[in-house]
Length: 226
Image 1 (tube, rainbow, N blue to C red):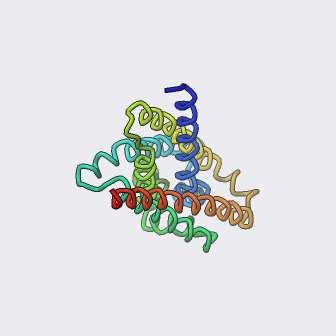
Image 2: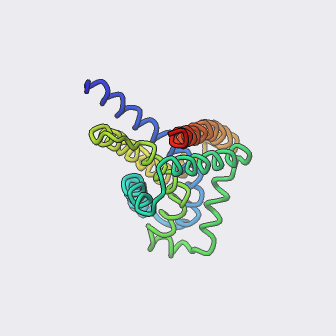
Image 3: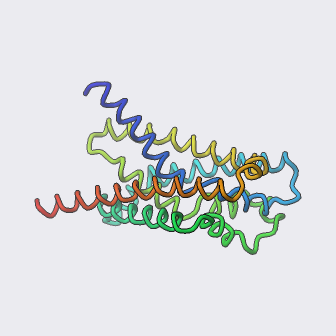
């Protein structure tokens, strides 16, 4: 197989995973909740927490993307069905973001209720990583990405996974930057800038969700015709 095929597959997998998962995580929406849960913490403490949360996000998404599909196959759930259901979830999430500029903040704030700053500092994984920074929707989307990258040829499947992992690293870095510099990030952005950013990313996410759903429907139709 030509090397160009592997390079194109690597690049497409990287962009697909990045464009699908980053808007769902939306680190800018997590930043205000992170600040409220760590109020009174020093800059050094917030830096340590941001590092741990970013690492946990990478591990969670990577595990869901790599092991999610095999687990579903164990229960007899086909890949086209996973694509259809996951695409519906992605599209639904995008639709909610398009119709509510502060949906991400509200959703994260609901998870944060009941947790004091002291509890948040002691528990970098829960609730700061899960479910605030990386919730069930993000994990389900990662499983969908892993299913969408599936290829019957083992070599191409490995290339697709290898292309998606750097995307997860970029997402983890984005989470770290947004949390580590939350104060500096939110001050110039303001409410209007946040609303514009969320609407643009939500529209791209909606298109990706519809594309994933179409791929699933197309595969199911082909199986039906056979």
